[in-house]
Image (cartoon, rainbow, N blue to C red; front, side, top):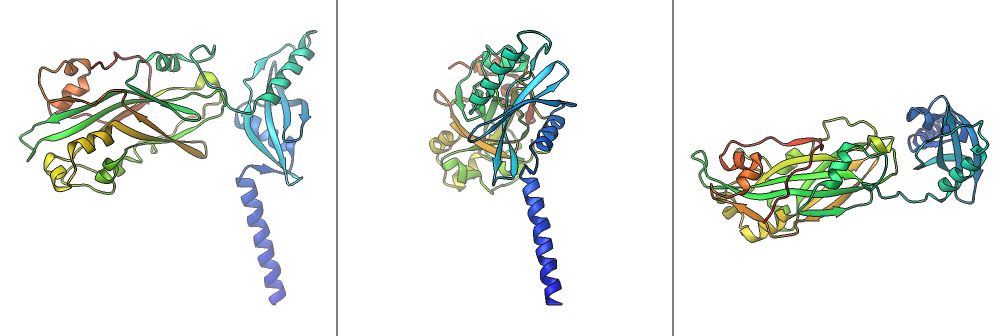
Length: 333
């Protein structure tokens, strides 16, 4: 009886091991894995044209009609294969032409040397209108991570006086851009979380009062959406994220012992955590100049952006996360 139970446990353990191996992207066959990747990224039906193995990777070129694509794979433990996530842009070829062999050789050579994602620029011939607008947008703060870049195009502190409030409210209005800056596809965006830094982090984290929610409650605002997988350079889009923080009224700020200088400093440098594929990166971005405050009905910033005016006049705004398509005037001092 005990022997049967031991065999059963071993069998269950083996099945679980297989599941773990499969979920982590490992396959027993390179041909099977390559066919699966081709199908996943709509490069199907396809056949393997050529493959080349080196010490740490195997180059595989697949052909679909008049297009070829090259990917890197890695063999581990001597019998498992895994996709390294490195793919060259597909190119169109004429396999009957005399130049085809040399084109193929050059393509394989490029694929073999492609170890790191390349930085995307406005000069890339395949970028779309959204990325062109992103690169052309002037900013008041910018920072780059491994695969994404963040621009601040609006960051204003707005004093709100209303009869509904027991004391004035200080709103921090953010308009930021998030854009992929890598030529390495595929990428699927999953979520974006923006959080202040310094002492402002503790001021907000896990706290709320009156009708003003803590920022933690907004962390699933974007996660609730489903984003398409970007599998080509021309499918890469920049996104605009408009959001609002507040000091939860001046009374609350006094109760929590937070000085305006410390709060402003924390709100002027933000951590933008971008979740994509099965990973994430946090990009810290700061204002280039001191934080601007709007507390006067004649302030010219009220005419720069209708959202700033609506906040100042207690009309409020809603958070927005959508495709960035048109450049905006720069926020000047």
